[in-house]
Length: 161
Length: 204
Image (cartoon, rainbow over all chains, first blue to last red; front, side):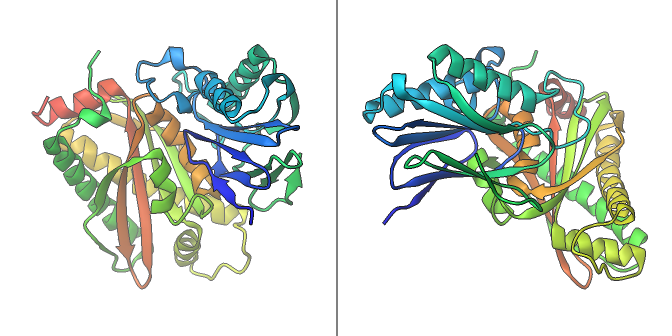
């Protein structure tokens, strides 16, 4: 029996086909799904902030796009995935409220998306698809077997990227 | 710059926050009763410091549909405040305020506007009591409203807390008129503002 593994906020998990992996209610956070199509090992990171070096309270490496993605890839490699084969899909990074306050948290959704792309690029992992930005929350389910990344939002049709 | 982190907060500080939450929610309840012109009771609020992973569960899961009202705070302290309400509770309040049952599942423009006003009054009453107790000037911005999954709405204050640590401070209040409503306040002062609130209360 396959199961669906749940990833919380500021969290990441690795799974292997036929299992799937999900994170619920992504807002400004970004869900980065990575897969090795040969071993069918997959991973999902739910990052909250773009840059661990910009903040002093940075011991939770799962929380940041820069450190979280590196850690996810490391854990996948431990399971036997090969980085050269890895491909990624990303979702989230919405701006939930029309205004945000005047701190550096402005456009944190966009900045999370940018930082995730940058981290993936540095690791040499191509992005096959994305569903990012706008102003609504997303629940995502990733299947390493097929690479399907299913996205659900309130009042919208389910889509697969 | 102060070195306070949420993790290092003392019991005493928690008691203070709890009391602030209590008084603030009390004022909010009074405001709600006046607006709806009926009796509204309130249970003693619960103040919780939660891990990011736990906040969704507290509100019935990350996918629970909630109405979230969010506004920024300026003045002597800076930060933001959010008030969350389950969608069904929001429908109930809007119906009551408008004097008619909501027929559609989704909120119309005017119903959204009524809901925004409810949020405005509740958060305003809350901030007012905070301002009175601490003698600090607090000016709220115009509120913004969204109806979406709890996890997605909560990502906004969680990210703000995320710059301070790995936990979020939640004040849960239960209002009852003829219907039980769970309301949640999330107050996100920045670090310096925490120190200012403490100092204003003679605890700094």
